[in-house]
Image (tube, rainbow, N blue to C red):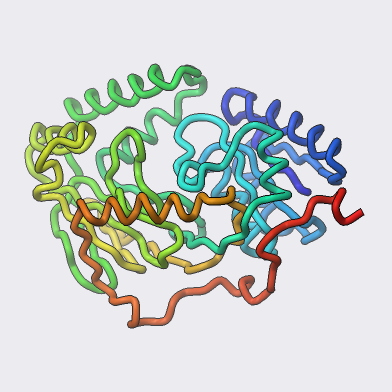
Length: 331
């Protein structure tokens, strides 16, 4: 079992969690190895050149660290086990991935293996979403802060405060959006291209998104006055009646975005690329949530599922067991 972690994630808490997990794996008969990287760029370089000398790849950290580490699992076709640490963790919340070491050990031995989709933006993979406009600016501003409060509600207040300040001090972007070759917006203020529900439990922009359906869900909020954009977000946050009126929600595989008439950003879906260990029953619960969300929210699919070949990762050709086996059982 190869464990990777960025030592600065969660102000050092991710590294402590990774070390605890290594001890628990050793106690259960696994042969774990731990690699700690100071920066995401170092982790990125490792994913491009590491050899497939391990049976599982365990990554501890937030969404950014997990997305970088997943690239190695895709390239080597090795089962990926994400362990959430820090704030956000959108991807791990989809399948209810545990963060307690004993539960992670249980996942390796008793979990299910599924092949999940991921997104590619430029030369970078992502597991959860790629956003443009107002919320992306807020997220980038907060993530530059070196130390974050541990309490969840205090962290949320930090985002709220930054959002209010940004909305007062900066003008809204003008974003053009094409999905599978069709222009869906010429002047949007906010665009989120999601592989999962974004942001679940806080501001659900894409409530029916799933990393198992082969499509992005794309949320487009029109560029109107700043007070009206804020009103849109608040109503969606509180899930008030009519909160999605005027908000576009689309489904597709290829998205092109231009911000303020700049160079295009091309984002594409790679279907079934990542071999992922998930807790038992989590896929069924995801599908139940998705069915419920689709009954309440209208989503426009621009590319029918029968048209166009899915973009599959080459590593998928390698067969894997659907259920892992504990080392003690093998012995």
